[in-house]
Image (cartoon, rainbow, N blue to C red; front, side):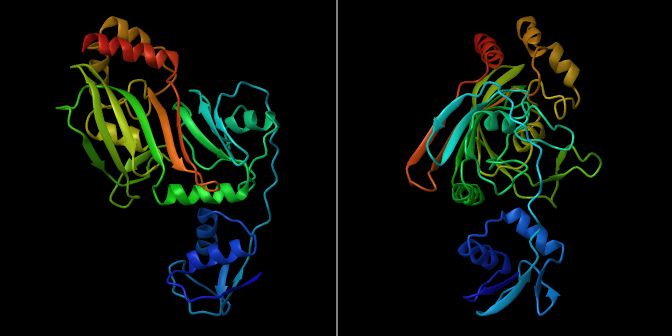
Length: 318
């Protein structure tokens, strides 16, 4: 396919994304970057970099991959809808539920539940229809899903420009030194020794987290957390970096002295923590300007019962 860049552009990727959209060809930024990386975008029969400046009238040859085939089968299981209109829907995702299928988990995801409810979903990523962003399998809370491609791309832009407000609540071991708000900055990348984990690294993507302590005790805390960026496992990594691992986090929460910290919990709290299926982390609210109607949307959700029970016990000791 030949695409002509009508106006001079500082970056080829941004110009091409706009040019494709003008022809009703919708593709995510991530997939477009992969095409640049794989040499599928040519100028004068030579691959170019996504950061290349382009003069007006530049012709680019782009090889778009065929749409992937999917074998998604709807699964009629519970779905809690917090907000819905003709363009998008906000879901309260329960703990212990993956957002979309992966190579190791082909069934039993949020996507399968969405399909069973007969919703129209965006098709930009056919293997995960409607999914604009993710929260971890064992993290509960608010998730926004797109019903059409225009809404999907609009939400992508909001996330890319950090104009969506995301607030979480976390229950952690230990306590910050004071009630003051904490700003955490630490770049995140894939762990080179374990591809299922992330790690802090100067070679990673910029990540910023704000932590506001709500309750502090000598053994555990309740934290209100606001994300500026949304990297994979960001909150879990940043809390561990200041020695505040999240209760129930079996991936990042086992750093020494994890056993001693568990033993220091009051028996009533320790008994509840052993019942957690994963980290005690809840995406409590999501706020954004609707990409189509431009209405201000703000959605909240209550944490799971077990999370609330542990939080109430921590507050009892404060």
